[in-house]
Length: 505
Image (cartoon, rainbow, N blue to C red):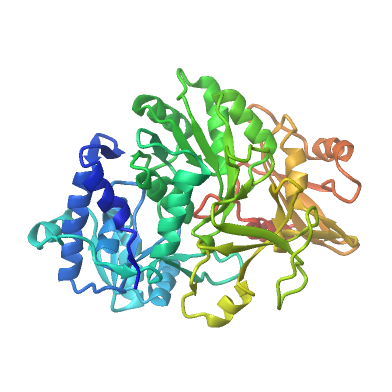
């Protein structure tokens, strides 16, 4: 039987490149050998605490050195990592602990209060604080000599999906899923080199940050520079100081960096920039590329797909506004969205639901066979996203199936309206939602964050959009706000906007 462990990503670097800098956080610099030594000592402590292969261990920490060390320690001990989003309330963390069956919570001191409250409510969950307490346990334990081997299909990580449809579900990813995704991201999608230096600004508790920033960077033997709290000016300063040439981010980060570039005394020389997590408006991509002189490779994926499914890749050329081509060994197609019980693939150019199959598709939702059967049909994972695939194989996401606005019988895709509005000089950020309307069923509403130094007028934005959008598409309602509600993975929470503005209708 084939065996495999995510822990091999770190272990192999300790063997092949022991003296290379693996991790930088503030003044702390650790080589691969040092990170692996720390992980093995903590894996010994976990074994001493009774963690056995297959046991689930929750991990709640920001982007500090403790996160990767604890993550690889759990993997080395044969445990299953359950990353916890840092923006969750104690009640939401309790759900994750209960639902996952975690017996242990490793928590950073900054999150200790929330973590302890959640663990007490979940009952039977032991809490260990990262830093002092975990370090002392590791110092007293017998370190493991190597990692515990696991079957390739054994669970490695359980990601709790943001729960856009109610209660968050645990997506179970295997060692095979994660090692393959890190490998094809590093060596096939984009040319990641051992002498690269990447900025780890995406939360490591999220699939994108964990696979692309942490695991793919280390799979290539490159250095990861951690930024515990994202701030655009600070990120630019840190990238310049550390010689960072690789940046992974979500659209909100690219917006902030493009704006901060004008006031920065120096800019980093970026070679690889990857965007994911949500659709990147073309106007933002153009602004960022102009400011930094670097190309952005936009990609797409979900927690259930490890996460990367597609990305713009040098091998196929890049096309702004698309999510590129599928990764090596992965099929991404467009299926008839309204047919739910089977997958009917559509020809090039037709709009339908994005479906995925390959080595990146998860094992299923933890303890939810019905939800798994709904999501994986005929061997394809149904994403719930609507998109198209052109004759050259470039994929494009049009919108979430659930976000489509039906106004007077016509389908309006918020993403398309957002792309147009992002070109308005007074708009820094926009989210387009559908609100209940007696006459048309739904009305198009644009929630706008003004560009710095501007004070756009709602009626004027509506008039401007009339000239650039079809009659059924332009927003009749424009709401001005100073900030968008963001989820733990920096995505705009449209359901919150819908609730907030529907009440004012």
